[in-house]
Length: 106
Image (cartoon, rainbow, N blue to C red; front, side):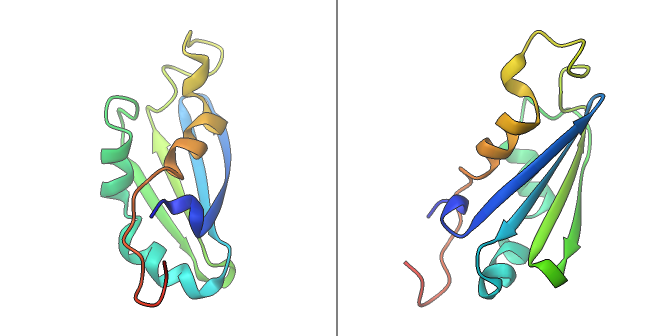
């Protein structure tokens, strides 16, 4: 299934850094996010786009993960000609990540 089936996202960007929060619709899916939406998977998902590191921050009180990705915006919003590579588009692309459903889910 796609990540978007169990979570939504918010994003922001500053310079050449993008930050994407992935928030579970239902807190019961938070363990699934923890297990499957890792920094390594996010970096791999954005291969060729994110040139720097991807750091994951866990926010269990709101069933969310936050990813800070450096070297992700082609030099930054004001320097890049690739308009589609900016924060909002990246968050939508991350929700297309394939994940394995937990037992009992779809």
